[in-house]
Length: 188
Image (cartoon, rainbow, N blue to C red; front, side, top):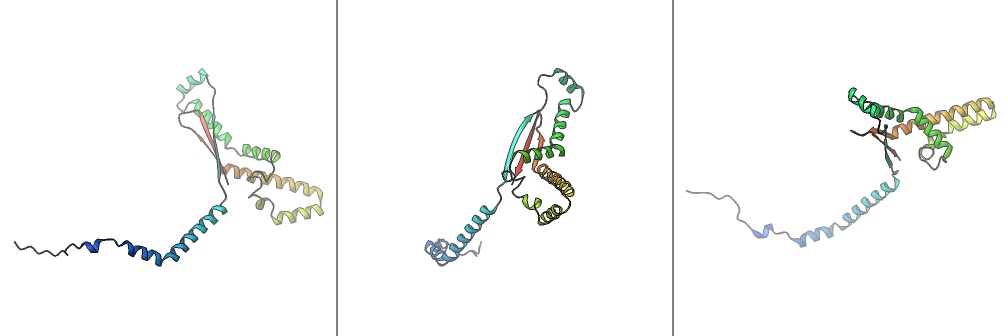
């Protein structure tokens, strides 16, 4: 049997990695490597220091009455269970607009607007636009009664806006097979 061997003979010299050649290539491109490193480092540092930090807080609350035997009887009788309905009711109350507005009012009364992000920092552009300042000066020069009504209306609008922002930032979820609710909030 005549078998043709079309393969090239194995040559060890071709397969060897020449480290000297690799170092010479790296040395030739040292400025490109250095500039790339400096550029990536500078962009990373700039991005890190210019990002608004996002903080997150989380807690769990226990819902329901412990040791209530009549509730246990009704839990067996109803398909959803009274404890689950009570937890769902508490979740809806915690998500309500009125609770968010009361929370904002309480924060506005007890904290400086600059000490909390949701009250001041970041919200300043929304609350203190040039148009609002001009409108307040016109009302100040004109009718004092209209100014008072406008300021009250402006405060209520601000509270509604901040309450909406709070509702968007908060997450309320019932924990499975427990009587607890997890409340989390993220704030930039």
